[in-house]
Length: 373
Image (cartoon, rainbow, N blue to C red):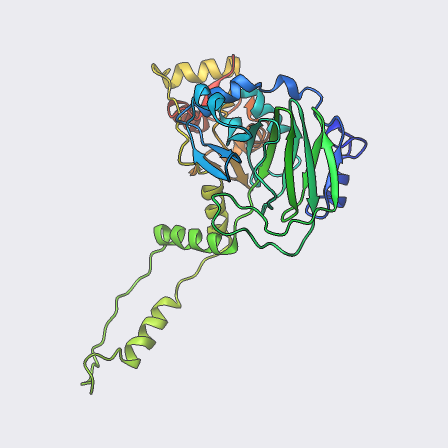
């Protein structure tokens, strides 16, 4: 945190958080000098053709159009230009992309969402727009011109399949070359136009709307709430109107519902379960011939363990959450499992308790974790 990193030039991660995070944009030249080794165009096209990946195709030829994938390379190469293809969650399919995203671990994993990679032909882009979340835009192959502005007018053009600002007013203008990075806080309008064919790597973050959080939390409570009692009316009296919902009924139900309570433990578990829940298109690959618990334990002690790149392990205090579930582990092993959550690997699990190895073995059989090479 306090050591300068190439990601921010001469800035430390701590300085970046204090001076720029959710405050103002930052352009860093040469932030990711090895970006060309992460993913090439053909690899991205192969992911765009994969039914298990989320991809979009945005075309400007003859008016704005958008389609969802998968897309074959042949289909893309025949499409009239300019166009852009975007693939979400590339970090779940590429180990090198996953390693790139983890360079941003100065932001809590609970906020880190995914790595999207886009390819555009000359002049391609998705139009001027704004995002409701923070984003790091890293230039891969080629160059892209970015115009950005902090504007209050967020009116969108009606009737388009993509969100494009009606009155875009940029205040800054940069051309990014391979390895350059642009950080944008939420709601900064931006428009990127490819100068020749180019690729852009976008590290995005979660920013749940309050309404969405409330709805999901109420659903969580529905599965975890147990209220005693039942509606009763032994003193029921005749009503003038049988169709009327009586005041006595309203008052009694109000009293019943007022007993709905939650505490920080409920909120903690809600966040742990919700934030680690895999996205709908994510599936795990259990081992075809899983090792027995004893063989798994012996092998893990010798080789170490690591999280599958599609897995997310978070913790709050002594409570751990893995892929949408509360993960029961021994309190004695909390420090080691925090290391597994932070570093996504545990090289020396020799001293873990038997009950923790049982939990690890169950996760291994589900495909959530693997054995180190």
